[in-house]
Length: 238
Image (tube, rainbow, N blue to C red; front, top):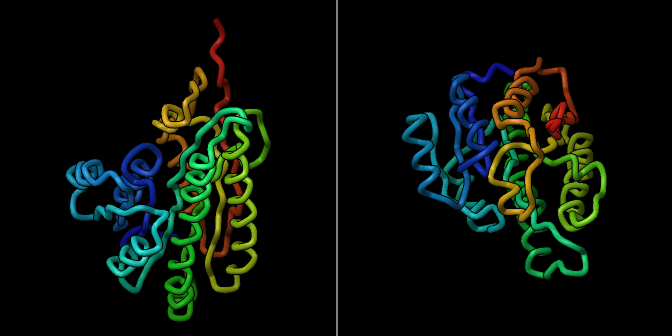
């Protein structure tokens, strides 16, 4: 896909990978709608990127917010990057219902609400131009393997893998690509929120966003359905 003049929605756009994906899309000529709860950070990113970036303060878990978001986007959407996500790590026996629900709602329900709203726009576009668009779901290596003290987060990311695979098979005849990416540790705020320390030598948001751009810019009849990314040397030698 040529990204010039394409319209994209990026969730979790206020920091980290979402902000970097927004920067890279704008640099390639796309118009980006950035969704997140932290309005001041979205506004700061707009100051950096200019009119090609439109802040959309919203809660990804709110059906009403997502409906309002898509009304603002209009009748066309070429790219959806479901990036919003969080983790609350700890022993299964100590996981609160609130932390369980929060992870399920952000990491799965938020993806569902945005994807459900995007599909009709992309299907309609496919009827007119023969290519619907591209949905990128940001999972994690925690969606490929279970680990102690990560059980609730594992559930959401395994679920996102299954949802992405089902969508890929369901939507391919509509000219809609679905890609699920599985990054390892990225140097973002995620680990502070999760309450654990990051690896010694993580990937950067620039690294991972570069791979997202590569997938998006692939020829229209070429689909990368899954991609796994890891730091080469996560632990520095002493």
